[in-house]
Image (cartoon, rainbow, N blue to C red; front, side, top):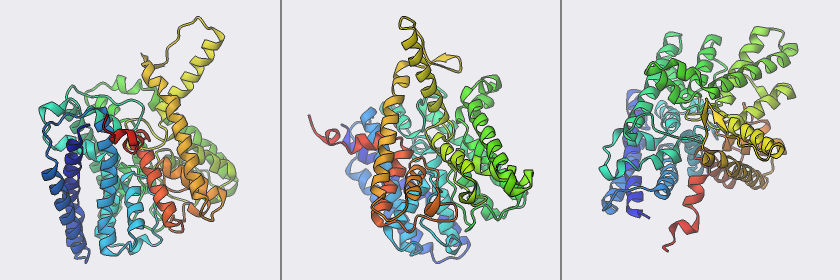
Length: 483
């Protein structure tokens, strides 16, 4: 294994994270806040640690194979979170480092689960960094690094292993022949959509600072907000804009590229897109009908249902109403949406719509084989045959998926919370959603959990964001054993 390349890349990442902290530092300077020194200290630590790693582990060759790609991805997200927690901790705005680490992991993994009970007391610089972690983690810090750092000839063709390990979904490919150009295209689309959302929110009447941080949280489908009531206090038209934004960032970014190259027909042929929109529409319709008797107004019920469906389906986790008080049918619909998530290749979490579709089609194929043993059937998506390796990977992933959920739930049971709290905490953190039900509901936080449970949930969020495999490979003893 190319260990030197692994640690050298971690050094590059740490330096890049220090550079990204210059933006919240600028915000703190603009508002003349005392957190300026905290950001300067965190940036200094990031530059020093990253520079040492790069100096000590300068690689002789820069080739990255699949194993190195998984290890770099897993360790990068852990280091990213450990360093990213420093501004919260050094400033004293989150006094416990474990709490700061939980909040940072939740930010970078775009989960949005929080230990804060009074978010409005935080400084502007810290609020900016908190929401900016969503934006960084949404598309992936390593994809950003590939887009902006020069690639060596030996490694340029191998970085697909990193992208496959970091980008969510069952299949990851190149938009164009060069991977670095693919990363650039993805980030340019990401930046353009984020900028557009900021402008629309600002023109629609949202304050500029709110527009920026809410756009970051929406683009990353993370859900950190700067108000105690999340987005409930904003005007209805602003909630609608955020709902549309959430749905837009839950779409596979490859489709936006197809639109850019004027292949609208190809984009509209996506079965995953139509399934994603259909699930949202049907879910919003069911909840609207279920809420009508208690709401009395169909427009109000439809708005709350639509915003919350968009929020949970895309795993953003914004809250426009206390849905923990909704009827059981509506809560059940939201609970199921926590598992589905958005489209593959988007910033959303969950299983992904395409993986659910492949699972159902694979089940149908298996059933038809039992009925017609001699028949030869293949699973198709968008008119193309899905290769056997991709189809066969679905079942092992689901086994690991539910094993992680069960283990997380079991470990959380050491804390004295009820069944609904612990099971939804496990589900919402693993699927990177944010709010659950009961004691971790939309008006509550994760502050009451013990330090042990917060570390368990932090690991669960990382497992969910990286889709299990990279972390399992990294912490497998055989990975580091010389043979």
